[in-house]
Image (spheres, rainbow, N blue to C red):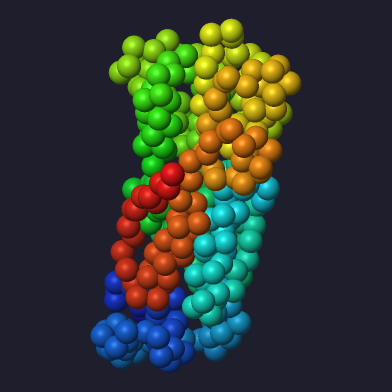
Length: 314
């Protein structure tokens, strides 16, 4: 007996996403005419008829996007999520928010739950190593944020450029005794890439590197500042604003107002508590808008995955 085609088979034959086929079947007016004609031709050619139960499930889950963040208390991720929600709500979509806590196992669980729920698409903050091979079935309706992977759509941040901008500003002011507060290298973006950029700048400008790694918390920034600070230190470059807040607190207690603190994240709390501290905006909200737009392009128009970089803002 010939195998009955599924909606996913039709999507592959048409070169579009499964959600696009679903929208054609449900006569969604937002589907481009050329896409609708192509899908309908393949449906007619193969005599495809969706089962009633599948149609019922799709109608219940239409226009919903899952967003998996690493931490609900992350200021930078919250900025990105705001951009996503504004874009998705503007296009008539609802969102389901989930937290991975940097756990690959938790990401797998969330993806399975979202798939069972039948969401149209997924945006995933991917700061740590994940099983991308196992995630390949989601490729046509998934966008990664902060990290790229072959074959997947992604929106990343210019981690190296951001650190170089911070270091360049300090060097231009004649500051050369610069220490670095970072996070564990298992975090490829906030951890390894930003640390490597600091080390490269030190090598290029003949600086002696001083660095220490911790976690993404105020307490870690406080401890690392205590570990790195010497009488000669004139600046602390921090991989995140959260670390910078902790470092600035330690400097304040030590009466070291001459030591400059810089961070990444555009967290308003840093400038409010420590007006002399500086922060670089990596374009988090804009990255959220871009991720949502890329996802909508994939699930609505069958756009291929693309990798983009969010522009940093000073």
